[in-house]
Length: 170
Image (cartoon, rainbow, N blue to C red):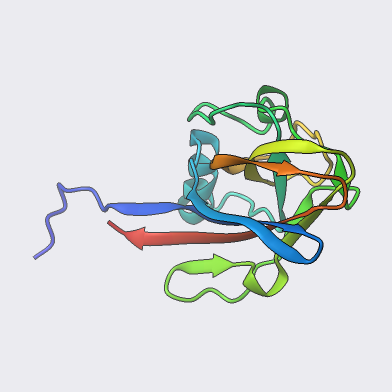
């Protein structure tokens, strides 16, 4: 029997696998789990249960501030609080091009996000947001993750991000 007094538990979030590529070789790699701030959780629950408007396209960005994401982070404040990195190509945040959903997971393995450094930078983390423009303070912040160790980039290094969004029973 189902106990209707007990909440249904689930875990949602993004795992980021980060690779630093220098001269065609991977010189650093790690996988970290995100913080899914209240703004992102509210958006997801609103889409699922209230028919709120879906975000058709999500974007991955990077931050260079020595910042630890917190639950109250929002798209309107995060780029400034975390010091978003904008010294990379392409000209905008990189689209999260997701593959098929399977077993409660969707990821961008077939089209990983790549950022080519246009200046020497130390990158502390990545985030998933609904606005495309670098530095934009609109939309929804779905996820933010601080790397275990900062990634030191030289000009022309590539920082490759594989993002895996999952929803699992807890």
